[in-house]
Length: 424
Image 1 (tube, rainbow, N blue to C red):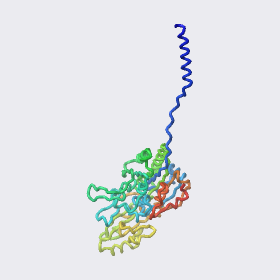
Image 2 (spheres, rainbow, N blue to C red; image 1 turned 90 degrees about the vertical axis):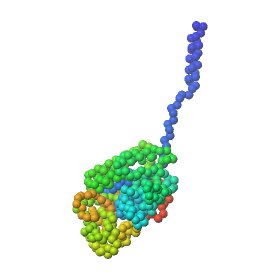
Image 3 (cartoon, rainbow, N blue to C red; image 1 turned 120 degrees about the vertical axis):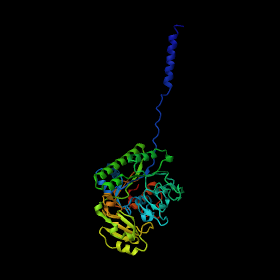
Image 4 (cartoon, rainbow, N blue to C red; image 1 turned 135 degrees about the horizontal axis):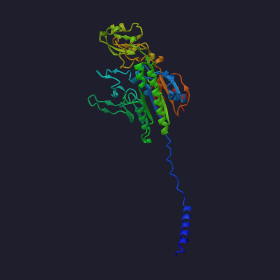
């Protein structure tokens, strides 16, 4: 038996070798397939980004998007203010028809109630024009909005007059963040990227994103100040971070990047005191700044008109019904009966100012070069057609409809004609 053991060991070794030769080698686990993502549409507002800020040499990311798509100096709607133009951009209707006629409003149907940018949740003010995210939601296109004016409103609903002012009915985006100025741009971008990390069933196909820092710098320091140029560069870098984040996700996107208006330099030395134009006993001043809107004290209409409607340096006043037709403004009941527009660079005030205020402002003639707004669009459904002729911002909402595959809107003030040749 001692002599047989080496033989058994050799036979066992041969058997194991044969087994090894007939067993297929282990294979590496298959990599998870990369998800084929359909393009999303991202509408970005950079508040107060004057069109010619792109020529300051601090916008490489926006320049790259413009070179790969289309760009233009876009005309805002009148008045060239924040809320009216943001609502026009997403409804395709001018302020006179959309109901958001200014940043501050009154309505005869709500005596004693004032609409302001800080308190604007009541659908009553917004229900005249349907925004693009409501159109999308009705069509089964999930939407998400980051700070866009009006996106926190249950559109089409009603708000109870008594506290806690419950909302009945209405449509909101599936996801929405109410505006908070202190949240920095990088966190806003991170929020958008997080939305797009979701599985397809809950991932938005329409996203809006809003930045306010350039507008704040333009008001505070003036449009030509180095601080404003620095803000332009910082937001451009934030746009670059958004583009990079989407690339890392493998998420294609059609970008439509816009501004609501431009910015003009102002100074207290160029201020028109309204109490020097008309007798304060004859009117109630509702708004002042780049324009003034007024109500006559009952029985004082003739005296007020005599004072307002004569020629003035750097200021022109009209009865509401006589505002020039090119402004498409003056029929909405929320517009006060008398309207005075300052020359670009000038301001109106209740009385003569005693200290310096903002060094930049907007709200002027929407045809003024200083009010021209940024427009850049790029993505898989947009050809590199380069700079386009100027167009009105009522055309942006129809463009978004095209990118989402929604049917053309009816009764809008704009259309997609400026972009036809650039759409794939």
